Length: 198
Image (cartoon, rainbow, N blue to C red; front, side, top):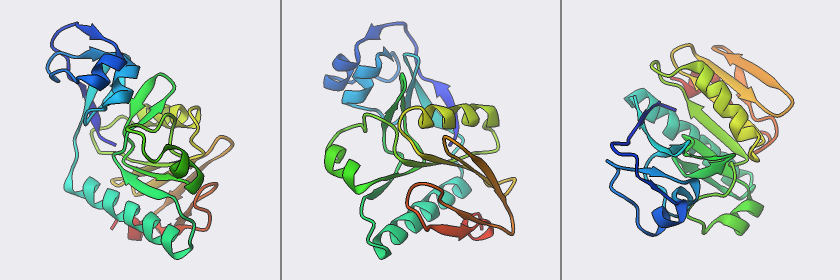
């Protein structure tokens, strides 16, 4: 995940329904979550404000693509079904988010696969933390995801070479030299921390 910036010049408030039908110019929006859900821009929605993701680096993009590819290859080779996404919008408790990498189970894909925005968190989410991000924000964000239907969150810290895997009942830290594995979703997947963060 990357640092967020509020993109709002004026204090015009519109409903999420109105936004979904006719997205405003991103220079002047304070919108409702319902508006965001109908037609999400390439941003996150937090407390009525659109937040632009900033701080994306080549390393961030490389890790995002690598992890998404690994999850996709694993789910296909093990015939687990579902789908892997990058930067796909989902709704959390009172917010609209776009996790860096996310996996949707086959059942949820059948139920929600044609929606513009997943109406809850993805079951498995990964956020890649940039050097300019505040770790506390992402610990809070992982809890937000878990309270909104997510079963497992990976917080990837490339600079520290750490991966924190959080579920509703556990938190595990994986470091350089170790192998990180899924805990509740896409079971059986694992990868060396050093390989993922290379």
